[in-house]
Image 1 (tube, one colour):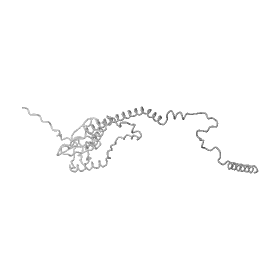
Image 2 (spheres, rainbow, N blue to C red):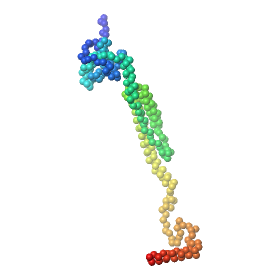
Image 3 (cartoon, one colour):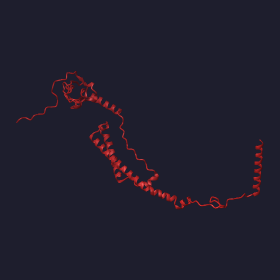
Image 4 (cartoon, helix red, strand yellow):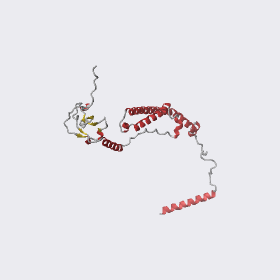
Length: 272
């Protein structure tokens, strides 16, 4: 029986190097290293892609190819000899310090709430009718649930909290956007129906107001224009108003005194 073939390990067994001087890991930024056991890797300085670190006696970067947008050919940074001059504990401490500093520098994420609808005036509350249609009443709780789900996921998911989006967070945001769009459409349809209802009821309301404050009798009284006979009293003057002075002698003396003053004043003005 032929023996089953064993898959070759992914580790590179070659002794070749790229001919460059040994690269110390302490000179590489901490965020571009991964020294966890079984996951040792680094960012290649040439092509800026992650490549594994192999070898115990002589660790080096594995051969790899450049990304497709860089041509896809073999990267000259492969088989680079490395100097493990930093321990796992030192790397963890530096990484935690950098993460804490980045978190402190990062501005808090702002969650913008939708602009609230303007309040209805008090004099229009009675004529407004129902405040929301059944469709809008059903969509409002769903919108609140979708918003709470997005906020809870962002609080518990580190990639989403760091500014990136995972698959679950993207699905929740898409669902929240679709629900919000449905609420917006339902609210616009309700506003359109309310405007149409107010337009239909406006003529009837104005007619009732005119009937309350006017009418045919008031209109006839305003348009009345009758001829006035000579010697008759105006409707704005009653017979109780005096037409002659009460003391005729005193009135005549007063008029004579005023006449004499008028004559003296005219004579003085002409002499001057």
